[in-house]
Amino acid sequence: MERHQRTEYYIVNEGVYYYDQGKPICEIPSTRDEMRRFRFSRLFPRNLSATDRSVPEVSPELAAKLADAMTLPPAEQSIPDQPDSDIPAGYTYVGQFVDHDLTADRTRVSLGTQINIEDLLQGRSPALDLDCLYGLGPDHPDSAMFYQRDRARLLMGRTSAVPGLDAQDGFDLPRLPFLTALPGTALIPDHRNDENLAVAQVHLAFIRFHNKVIADLGEVGTPSVTLFEKARELVVKHYQWMLRHDFLPRIVKRSIVDDVFTNGRRFFEAPGYIKPGDTPTMPVEFSVAAFRLGHSMIRGGYEWNAFFNFRGARPPEGKRIGPGSLELLFDFSGTSGSRIGPLTSTNPLPSNWIADFRRLFRLTDVPGGDPGLAAPADGFNVAKRIDTRLVEPLRELPEGAIGAPPGESVEPIARNLAFRNFMRAGMVSLASGQQAAKFLQVPQLADKDILDGNGAGANFRTLSAEEQDVLVKNTPLWLYVLREAELHGGILDEVGGRIVAEVFHRAMEGSRYSIVTDPSFRPTLGPEPGSFGMPHLLLYAFEGRADRLAPAQ
Image (cartoon, rainbow, N blue to C red; front, side, top):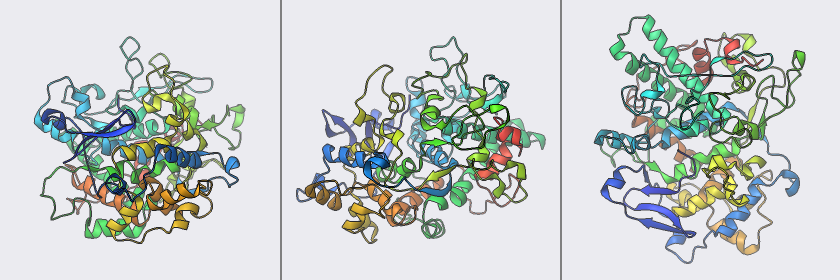
């Protein structure tokens, strides 16, 4: 079953990196093994500390101290709470969904079965093509289980009734039935999209989006033989448009996004260095560092719906049960549940845990939107600011979220998300922030900026003088990207922004259906032709109905 926590990385032209007794090892795989691996690459050279003894190394002990500083509760650091951003909180989990689309290794679905070379190569291609939603398509034996009998629409699941709410069809992920080997396992290509309820509900929204496109194409007489592929093309291109025009400008400096999508890439697999049709790779600098920005955006809890919220007005009839904490969003998922166990067909998602999308995205931003789709007073969620702080629940992740076998105890530091990010970077000798800035020909952050940030981020002044010296000379790239954003209003700047924008551009270019290779494309779906963001997608997928966008109210 897929997890964020990779135990090895295959880097093109280098080999497979993994840990052996706490030390990073690089091993050359066989040709067959190489073909079955997800291909990573390097955007920058390896960390200088791997080859130059004059560059101090970030030890596991220092990594633990950095992680501790990034995840300690504010009261224990005598600093204010992590500031909010102005980004609607739902985009945090759009980012997680996108990450799983970019890094899904489709060959995993097919291990142990017959598979042809084309499928192997596709499995090596990180493209923004929604394979985390479609798998290998309805006609492939390993993906047919995700589809309805018409082999065009995707399956959806049914929630369970609770006092005050009936069971609801189409508001949970589809799950394996009770009398199967893994009851309750979500019938989706990438099980990481069922590790917390927020990303699971975003995945469900994309299932509904696809099914609505299928229904509309069917109504205008699209032949059944071309129906699925026509729908997929529309869905993928609208998805890419949303990422380019709605998601990316919220997290990356707009001038960088515009430059990359207008003038092309300058550093990552730039034109002239690759041949047309070459399959993309995934830079470890993006996967292990820059696109882990979303970890900083996560809240400790959410105004989830009328039943689970913190400060929202109590609905009539005393519906409010308790807080919509991050721990509960993990618990009510199929792979991370630690107190209630995995969801099953006999214990499906309760109807009072269906997302209220009005609280996660500003649906009334769409011109002409129904005022009834506005979030309740004091009930809207914004993401935390992108900076060097992570909320306390990420200090000790559930064992299920890190792939630990059921019942196995994992020491606290190994469950700290920040520590895991630092150790993963060490495994592949990831370039430092200073190296990245030099390679990209942008000014480096000053020592004081790295240590102090803007005063509201992680406090590294508690480190010894020697540890501070290591940090300012060899800043882990993930930390550098977050500190850079912290100093620029919570937006990825010259290093992080350039990496993310160029990888998104290449991942769109590498998709079979692409707005980069089809620049004439313009959105046609939704309530505002020519424009398309997540609010448009949700309004279209749920037909603009409040009882579908917020059934638990």
